[in-house]
Amino acid sequence: MASAASRTSLLRTRIMDFITSMATLPLLLGCVGVFSLCKLLQWLRTRAYVRNAVVVITGATSGLGRECARVFHAAGAKLVLCGRNAEALEELTRELAASRATEVQTHKPYTVTFDLTDPGAIVGAAAEILQCFGYVDVLINNAGISYRGTIVDTSLDVDKRVMETNYFGPVGLTKALLPSMIRRRQGHVVAISSIQGKISVPFRSAYAASKHATQAFFDCLRAEVEQHDIEVTVVSPGYIHTNLSLNAVTADGSKYGVMDKTTAQGRSPSQVARDVLAAVGKKKKDVVLADVAPSLAVYLRTLAPRLFFSLMASRARKEQKPKHC
Ligand SMILES: NC(=O)C1=CN([C@@H]2O[C@H](COP(=O)(O)OP(=O)(O)OC[C@H]3O[C@@H](n4cnc5c(N)ncnc54)[C@H](OP(=O)(O)O)[C@@H]3O)[C@@H](O)[C@H]2O)C=CC1
Ligand SMILES: CCCCCCCCCCCCCCCC(=O)OCC(=O)COP(=O)(O)O
Image (cartoon, rainbow, N blue to C red; front, side, top):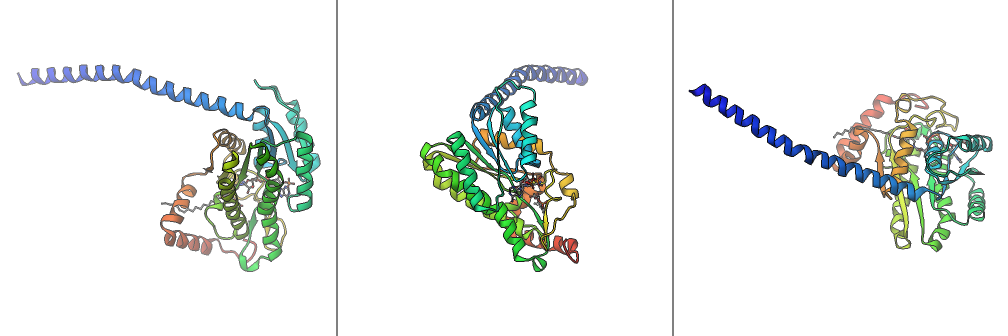
């Protein structure tokens, strides 16, 4: 008798489960459908935003800049590729011009060669871009240099060089293009910062300082130009697999020349470039593109600073090397 009752109860449960799952399935499918539709609409909006837009990319000769060039070119942007190496820029232009057509019309990029540590050259480059195109829709301040060294061993010239490249360069170029954006009441300024613009790690003083300054400057800019309908996006990536560590400068100004394990194991630059395109399309104001630990470290720095500082001090003790760490 008892087992018959339990069998009936089991059957009832199974029937209820079946009915519930039948009701949940369309709901689930509906959710997936709405999600996919939202994704598609966002993708279309990004494409429309970038298609035929004049997009200036600094540091286009390597790493993330080169990948941004590929991604924005494929999305139909009119690219202005900036860098120090004219030959590398021309090579990239040829590659892009020869690349297979996407579903959108693509444009042959224009190149401008200048060094971001030269304020006069920056003004000249901005004038050339404006003379050629009349306006800039999106400026991607990507070029940058990293650093390895102890503060005590590092010459002030090195601090200045990193600051000139990573901070004064982007600031100079942005200031040179900003008045035309304000007049037009249209424009989008992107700063490729770093997670090190939000937290400082040992032996990166000049680099972290330049990125913190970048974050601060472009946060101020965002507030000031919102009234002119200009967008500002600060992107803070974690490690990316590029030549950044190879090209880093050391305490005495010489090249570090090592592919660090952290860099080699970093995200793929093409993935990060796609994330940059998405952030621009969504007009994001501030984006962190990093793994869990660095992202959490940003919160730890704010919520438990003493713990964060002691973690960094212990990291410094462990990593300390006699010179050029
Ligand atoms: N790789 C990483 O782990 C991370 C990188 N970033 C940031 O991404 C950005 C791109 O770096 P990434 O691609 O990784 O590194 P790369 O070293 O591969 O590229 C750096 C680019 O900046 C250019 N550049 C350097 N100095 C100058 C200068 N004085 N004037 C003009 N251009 C210059 C380089 O040109 P040239 O070829 O002439 O040297 C190169 O095109 C940087 O701002 C970096 O801080 C942020 C977080 C993580
Ligand atoms: C609540 C748990 C929190 C756990 C946090 C633990 C602390 C972890 C410390 C993480 C430090 C991350 C440093 C990330 C640095 C980084 O991604 O930098 C990006 C760059 O710009 C790389 O430049 P580099 O020249 O340094 O290679």
